[in-house]
Length: 247
Image (cartoon, rainbow, N blue to C red):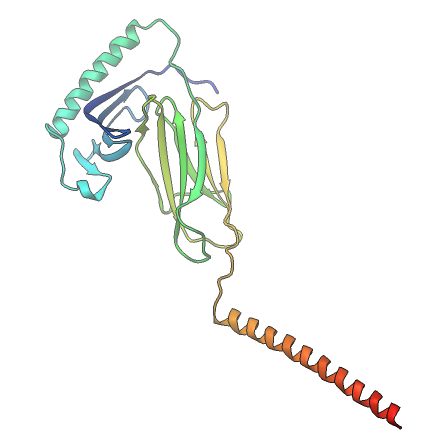
């Protein structure tokens, strides 16, 4: 895969960190600026979970967790955009001064799984995860029976990990049906060629119900009847043999 020379600047600002037993509580402000899409991103993470992110089109914070509905950043969108502008200036200076090779590219690890146990005809969600890739620029698309689908899909922002690599999730709402096959198609600069992972629903195990109980009861009664019939037959044969000997 031949790609252009791109640059990315990431800033992880620790606003709170404290040890609690064996665990470190970390609140991070994460800025991403790069000369590819997305050209900017800002979100707040607590212990690796995204709390909310900045929607620069709506110019407001969007909560990822319901508990943080109504929370805002000090300075709001204007303050965050000002910091983004400074980072973009620094990125341009770095690009002009840099004479070295382009930044490294790390391919993603890809996994796909269902959110809940599969039951035919019951709504469910498929999750496709791309993990540990760099830089934070990736394409993830859903296919159903090898046909592109966007009905019911959703994709997250880029989550920045402690090693500065990224992870991203995409979700697809679906209703499991026998014979359907789903796949997640991923493109990234670190991959020699696009990668595709497949998922096909397994046949759910039959649940026990009244019909199952009745069938089991009928089978048991049939076996008992057969055993009783054999016993009666043996006894009748023994009675006839005794009568013949008496004559």
